[in-house]
Length: 395
Image 1 (cartoon, rainbow, N blue to C red):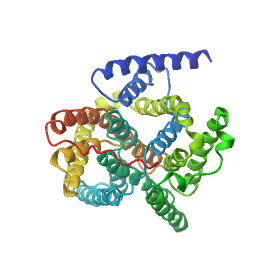
Image 2: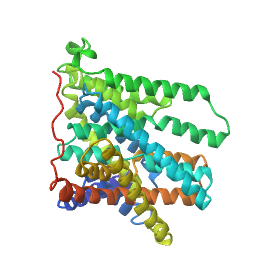
Image 3: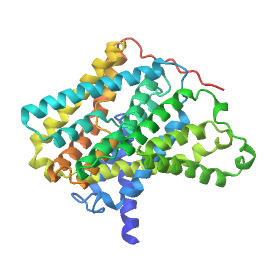
Image 4: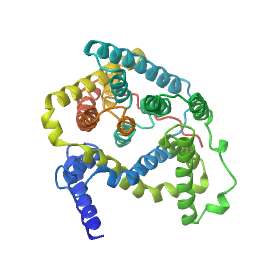
């Protein structure tokens, strides 16, 4: 117990100091969490011996993050805000797949290596991007909603990707599981389109929960975890299920107090998730493969940023908005890490590729925040104003 208390105390102190320092440079708190995880990890202070020590608890942070997004976001009555993300993500998948196949052919990668690189390229970080948009007051703008819907579509893609990885491990393919995943994904998409007003999900439970904060907390946690379990059982990610739970809670008058009650838990557990990324970062491996990791990180950022910029420009956004969108969607996300970790546990990829993937992911998260801040400061603010019209909030 003394060791646990000492480790957690040191972690909290380190996060506090790094957050204060990075706040002066207007960087997201996520960066402080990753750096703190690296400094206390097995390759530095060794207060935590491995990411597996806290990983099961840390993954709750992603569930809480998504439930808060569901609470805060209003589903707009606008076809363009649903159609544009679908087109944008579809274009990104097609172009990325073609690029990865071409490179795999030229350098003679195996199809599994190409598949993992494809996965890392198409997933962005919901946590980093949503925090950045929220801090700058852009989360509920037309532009912010388009970005967020793209991230949600990426979450929907996690199910078939995990199915492919399971096929690679076992050599068998469950068409039933894939069919269920696709059906549930379509159902979620239709539901997000259908929810436009508070009465759609309003239940007559106000008298039961209103005024009883303990009941609200446990009911909210049950919804968050329960929807996550249902999503996992249907082949989707638990985070997507928590997002749906957040939409449900946000529409209920009986749970108005719950958001403030769960916010401290969300902050703590999200921090733990990104601490695990820092814990996995092996500096010795990075030094031994510095050229590979550096070039891989820069190439990934360039490809993601450039491709997203061109896609947004094709959707009739200004160059300033398109460059900003490209910077926001330049990094590797938490679900890319999840898929990469699963592939390694299934022995689909080897240890070196796993280490390289984690190193590139951590560095892309660190560099992308600096890149996004620079683009917003020097490009967006000196060009045509970003589309900041707040979406209509239904009563």
